Length: 164
Image (cartoon, rainbow, N blue to C red):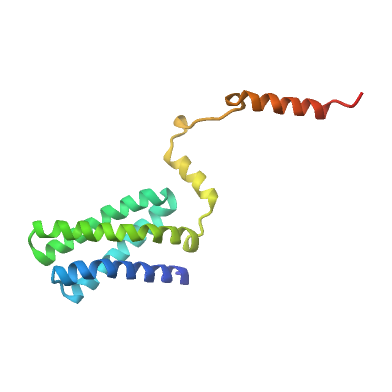
């Protein structure tokens, strides 16, 4: 059910989260170790399920990074507000933590696409179809390059005519 690849990915993601959350909330904000682990496990669960398994499969790296930024900032802000109790002292740590996490998770998303989700180039065509409505798609034809079309026609005529 849950493959070893997912467990490795969760471990990598947890290391990224600990490296971002502990210095900001544990050392600077003075949160206890239990609170730091609670923050990282909530971030791990929410961003892995929503961002890495759901959004990444369907929309790609950029949309997933934006969604992770919003989710991570929201969770860090809420936990920071609970820890500090002062709203003004929670915005800057949440921005710093979310920025650090999203910067490193961009590389993690590439790892997820290649090693865990095994998404190939055919997925990108499907994503383009999801993101661009059918009426807004551009069709390319041979008329865009008339010299290429004339060259192809000349080659076809040469191959279809028998030698005289």
